Length: 298
Image 1 (cartoon, rainbow, N blue to C red):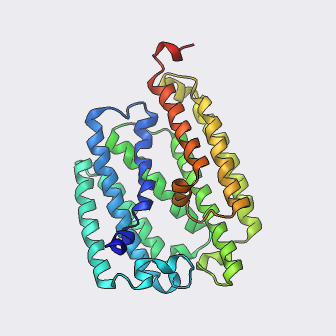
Image 2 (image 1 turned 90 degrees about the vertical axis):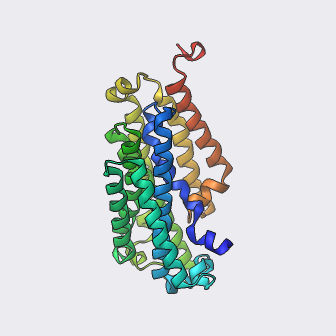
Image 3 (image 1 turned 180 degrees about the vertical axis):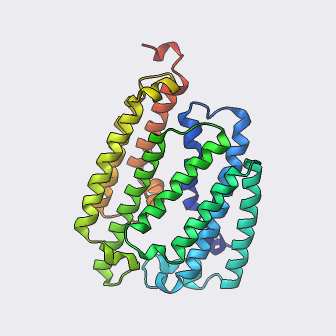
């Protein structure tokens, strides 16, 4: 049973928590009528993501067998048979579509799910072999999660929130490609066809550039007059301390520890990142949800 669970990659479901970002930043995360729809949307993205992972693993069996870590995946290792995996994939997509309909009966969320599926299929069936385009496609998936979260939460998303989501996911994708490049230097084997379009200097430059832009974009978002007007506070910029600290730690993991291969593994295992993320969430909670409490007033 553990191999079938591993096939679904439940650890990667943490990426779908981006669905709660719009409602959380809008100060409406605890509106009880929207919680069930957010949960349904989360499950829909989880089922779709797992189905896409199965398709991707099915197509990459031979390449994964050359990888020191991916060779242990259920399909690459032969622990799960191909026909069984395809049946599980179909069932996941059906259940995902049903949950997506429950989350938003106006079909807009289903449209976003469908777009997410089509983009990832184009990635699996060839676009992942093109350098730069591959990381742009990966990053677009996080933007679609945020847009989907806004639809089922019935809140508006600012352009800054979309930009920051895209930049952050792009930053992590670049770090992952850098890890793949280092692995290529160790094994002498290209783990991805797109790696021929990257080198260490290029990826290092992209990491430095994207991290700087993320910090500037986040600060601009927190002090934007539109943000201040919509959220009713001008103190959101205090939370930028934790954004900067988190990025610095991620850069340290990438350049010093050389362990940036899996963003979800970093989230689950790195205590510095966990504490920084918790403090960032807590700071926003205090600023947006407790601003009327006397102790937090000026």
